[in-house]
Image (cartoon, rainbow, N blue to C red; front, side, top):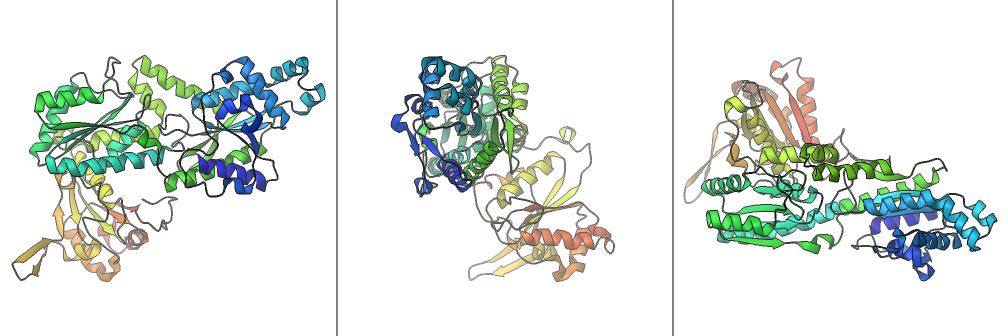
Length: 532
């Protein structure tokens, strides 16, 4: 929020506007006085790294009443404020929209009371509203990400990683409760990032027999050598009948049926604290600057808008359209229309849910249940370029998705150098014993378990390009009958794909699907705005 506040202040000053801070939310607007202060450039210095908001935030019962909104209008007119940037959730933004619609009648009442003159009312006939969504729950429809969500996810993943170590040592199960009374985004994405065994979220309740399925899954995980089980529970999790599922309830099921040592960790307001992530700092900055530009473009006939993130683009969306859609999610959940609730959350939420459900299966589907229609292709995956966080998670996702499509997956170690050497057993002689290393291996479902939480590259990665020995690369593709190639890495991965595609007229072995996934801290790959 402080990043957004800083951007609004400085962009407003840059455009020649007077900028005022309203402290303590709508209550400060109602109370007036010292709660409304003139800001300058230095007012927002050294705040971008601070959590929370330096101007405070508070729920206001007074603003919900007509009398309170009348006081708020009077206080704004004292300073000539008719452009308002509101940072909050759907309740705050709905209140701002109500305030805007009532503005003409509020002016009339103030004139009748003698608080303002008719000339002043004519001078400020409208108030313009632009909203920014600040919520760690990411529960506002119309934007892919709200300010604060990414930082909250950082806190959750830090906590899950921390309990993983003690759980590994003692073979424990942990039930981690996260925020999300009406939205399961935090629980879902945290479960996806931490490879949690199960996630309970409000929008997608588990099957009626979830207790049996959960215990069977945890038991099978232990049978495959997994020493720890992580279950993520959103505080608003429900069953199919709309009854609450609590973290204590989940723990009791595991203890009684499996006799596993199981602990509950409730993260609570830890998720709201801590320094904001780099993503939240730049998101708040981009949204705050765009909010001021939106106010400058506003006319009396312009609908109030909310600044949203669509993919990686900052866009303006009609405020009440988003508010109504958010309310429809809650209504769908009350009516137990779970499919509609997930759909209304948006494409990003739906993709995350589908990905999580696929990647957390205990085993790939049987051949008759796969998604390939009976075809079995051989796909190869390698990392190319400098190592970067996210490479292992990408390999895990690729391997399991490919297996679900009845494909055979070859993991190629050490990039193109490993492909060139192929199945040769490279022997490293140590003082004690020789070590044999296979540079190409077929990968199965459990080979990639727990890969997501580690940085670097388990497959190994080099910066070499296929031009080092192009004929040998072609020969190996032919020998292993590789039908598709997936390269994960930086500019070298992109360049390698380009080199091979340009040689398709010469080598038919390159006439196969080839995909490069940008994964580099340099973020320098053409065609994408954001690399993993």
